[in-house]
Length: 346
Ligand SMILES: *[C@@H]1O[C@H](CO)[C@@H](O)[C@H](O)[C@H]1NC(C)=O
Ligand SMILES: *[C@@H]1O[C@H](CO)[C@@H](O)[C@H](O)[C@H]1NC(C)=O
Ligand SMILES: *[C@@H]1O[C@H](CO)[C@@H](O)[C@H](O)[C@H]1NC(C)=O
Image 1 (cartoon, rainbow, N blue to C red):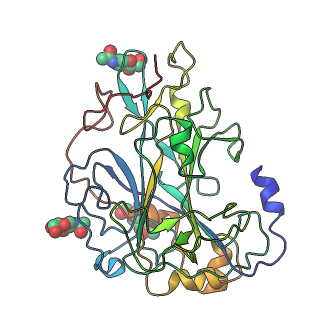
Image 2 (image 1 turned 60 degrees about the vertical axis):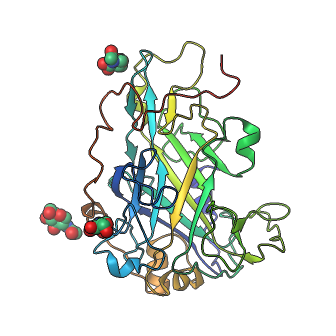
């Protein structure tokens, strides 16, 4: 759906919120307190946003709003951390260069980062009538599979997609593999987390199994949660805009494949993944979800939440603790990875 078409849907008053806001870049480096806690460096490069208490080790009992002195998110009470891997371009001589990110539509002056959504029903549902409980302190989750190299592997985590952006507001068509043509406005990655919680565990050893997709249908179609994961939660979605345009003039693979590679080597795109560490202050997220509102400024007004300026978001940064070159032309991806086209690659 085109962005403009989507905005015309926003005429009826919703019962609850579709919250949409941006978070600027906090830091880009090899740290991962969820999957590789304590490792400095962690396996691969991430781009991280949110509260500046982000660290190699993050005790789930830690009070993130109290430990942070600022956040890169527009809602100033959100000290959560949200992160993804980063994209690299692989030149025909085998060298890699990091693909920079852009702000998103309506957040053009934000310093990179990602856009977050929390929604109670499908984004195009004008009602947003399904009340949901906000996540609890200490809650974490992961979506995706870093070992996925085929469509079948990727389909196990639903709704992790790419859009080859013909215009700045393109949101379709979505693909599960990397786009293979030059995208006039860059590539958007979208990550939608599972929406059924087991109601007991704030995390699980694989960071996935305390969550589930609906038993049938999808979140969008109102599919029921399975008995093992009966609690329906808000859908968390990330959008990340990658400025691939700067590589349009270089030579691309002669076989028509994509020149882009995730920071852990996946050259298919099927292994896109995201990490979430909840850290909203007190009941701020619940208040916003319960307010009948769309996006950021309206939700600020309806819920009494506080927004900060994009300049203030951009001012919150963290110095990388891992000292290595992630931005030059590199012979290997940081951590030693090379492009992996999967089992069927020639
Ligand atoms: C990260 O953790 C280390 C070790 O506990 C600590 O010295 C450092 O101040 C922490 N950094 C941040 C940004 O909280
Ligand atoms: C590889 O190609 C890129 C893009 O043309 C170029 O900038 C870089 O210097 C090359 N690296 C080497 C080692 O030749
Ligand atoms: C952002 O940082 C700049 C430079 O330190 C400072 O002049 C400005 O007042 C800050 N703005 C906000 C909104 O914090």
